[in-house]
Amino acid sequence: MVLITQDTTWYHKVSLLALGGKRLTNGILSEGEKSRLGGLNRGTSAGYTQVFPREAVLPTGETIVFDVSTPADRDGKGVLRIGKDGGRTITLASAKNDDLSCIQFNGDFSRMLMSWQSQGRVDVYDFVALLKDGDREKALLGTIREDNLARAVFFIGKTDEVMTAHWNNRVLRWRHAPSGYESEQVYLGDSPIFYAEPDVDGSRILIAENYGQGMVGAYLYSVRARRKWLDLVDNYKWIGMAFATNGDIVYGASNWPEKNSTVYHFSRLQDLARVAQIVLADDCRVADGESLGKSLCWPAGLDADATVRGASSRDPQLSEGVTSLLLDLGRALVDATQQFLE
Image 1 (cartoon, rainbow, N blue to C red):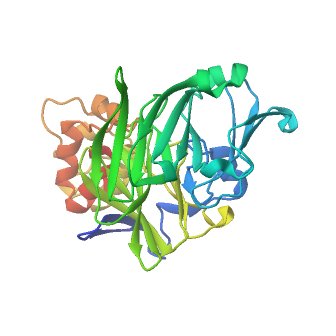
Image 2 (cartoon, one colour):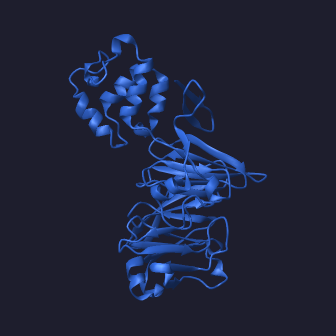
């Protein structure tokens, strides 16, 4: 096995390869696998071009289908289709979509947003109330207004916080205050940004930039570390990328969902520890199944088993003990665990 790191001005990339050249951190999902996995963020913003099916299951058990415009096309009918055979519909826009750019839901479907790029406007709704009586005016909770708005807009997790991308190279995080929505800049890029999808807590963002001449590219950005971490894909015009429900990233260089099916898997700390054994100095190695605390490189007085358990749930604040051990494994392995450090 070979671990390759690339560190450039634009991105930092880690690839784990088998000697035969197979990339272990990436794979191709079938449509069935992708459908079972599902997207983290539900709505028509996610993916930019389509990655996951544009439907979801509501907390009530009913299926909801999003027949609404997306950032990459405007062919939607402007309606939500709910229940068996889509028997119940909620109309959000006219047949011409009223320039509706996209819709998006938060993690528990208590909130819905509608973005209107040409107006620089995002409307946030109480979706439970909207489902109850269909009155959008009564269900409206607040409005965001900002220039240079991109079409794709997202909620952050199960909150009513919103993340917007902007053509003047910015990504903003909006919080609902008594006076209305207030913004904080979380990223300033080098090129116009047309897509910024947050993970479950907004600490990592999938960002897509327009480099000019029709070329576009996407990468993973860490808000905590304030750095680009992983270059994902670039292409002429068409790319797709989205967080999956398990935190992995599914992406591709196409306008067709079946081709946007490459998965980047974030390894668990235990998996990285096993890889570490390959390059670890003899004096630092532990026998199979032994606690990392048995390693001569482990800091004295620190409970190794408790430390690893604390980091295994992808806690972004990796404990001091694991960091110290990995530093002794060499720079490459430290880079490989940036997903935990950041």
